[in-house]
Image (cartoon, rainbow, N blue to C red; front, top):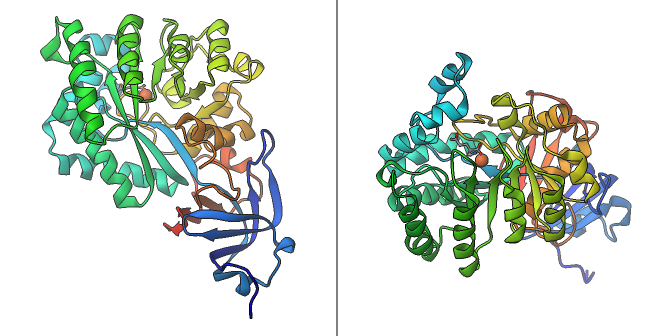
Length: 411
Ligand code: NIG
Ligand code: FE
């Protein structure tokens, strides 16, 4: 029979869908149908509006038993490729040392640099893959992974290559960020300028030429890099057409978020100490606020990011794990959503937007990921919950019952 219908690969039925279409609300569709062709969603709407019977519409029809479908979650800020761990520093902090004191004594980030440099690429991959897998089990279908524990060309390269390899091994999209100015490596101890110059003139163009850099990041802080150094890096990145983002105003206000906005950054991250004037700059630039409540929690910070100002100025808020060995050994994005609600007073709707649409925006994937709408990638998480708010409400427990990435079922 001729129907004029180009058969879809999959049709998901007997589901409720939080599409997140539009700028507010969950965009819920009851008794929904989702059509998938290739790697894309081609239909997301009411089952009753399908023009043909399900088996005429698609090669494979799957019944989801009334489950809730959301976009697969997006963890848009992680440092999950590293060797070793820093449990000893966790203990030191519990005995009274501060994160800054540990860093100044040559521990902190530099401790992870030593361990990461000593690991072979295969060892790094073996150590890091389970962390990415844990995120996947929690509903994550796209991960941003930063380098920054190599701090020399070979070390940064191997971290970025391992990040790419994780994406291939798990069949998910991984975006690689060169975290170029994270800490000053010991071999440049009294030569800050030479380090920044080498990063900008040699390592950045080289790593980009190897196809390893999707974006460039840095750490703007008293214990890390100054606004002037950040500007040099960002100018070099923009000259190579690379998007930038920044660890900004986490422990003090160096006006980092405003600098990020000045360079049209995808996101300004942490931003606990960011002023309202800088928030206005972020709004004008379309820079996303990347909230990292687990780092706030682990460091027992007390200064809250300017959530009300972000809302008033209409800055999109994203939420991520910041998964790293120092300040945020968190391997669950749903827990980050709960922390964002509990500690930062986000609503569960803001938390879900923060790990879907707004996380996509923070990765430059707006219009391609983060919503369940026709034309987006078929990245879907299937949850046995009654309401979307439960995704932020439960702590621990079970992740989704199924995850689709690019139209393929991952579990
Ligand atoms: O996002 N703030 C800088 N970078 C990481 C921490 C890195 C580390 O301590 O290893 C962060 O919190
Ligand atoms: Fe970070």
